[in-house]
Amino acid sequence: MSLSHEYAETHEVFNQVPPLDGVNLYRIDLPLQIITTPSGRELAFEFDAGTKRKLIAGLDAIGETQLHERAIAAFETQQNEALPWLSGSSAPGIAR
Image 1 (cartoon, rainbow, N blue to C red):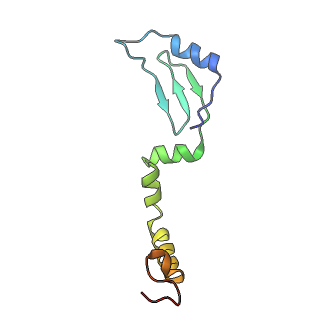
Image 2 (image 1 turned 90 degrees about the vertical axis):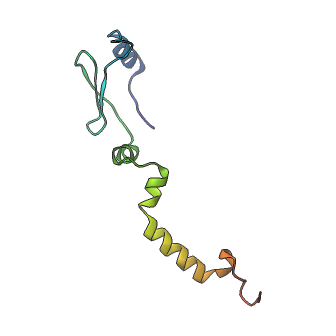
Image 3 (image 1 turned 180 degrees about the horizontal axis):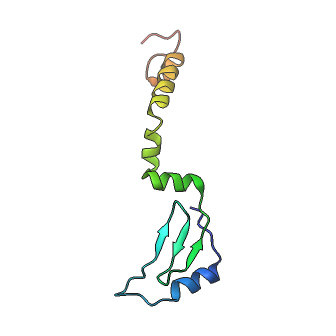
């Protein structure tokens, strides 16, 4: 992931307010790319657009792949017809 912010400012922000019962209450708004500190200070941050889209949609690598199931199935069908020996069938001109 490509979350970027100046280290010194980030360090300052995360250390400015002591934890409440051991927990710092920061709000991270990924769609708007804003971190709100416990004191209400808002900080904009940069984040990779593709990764952001996947996180907001709740997709992992498998879920993203499943979005393309039809295209993958069509490719596999075409590949099996054009190159049947790749799917375990015999090579052209060779009988099993």
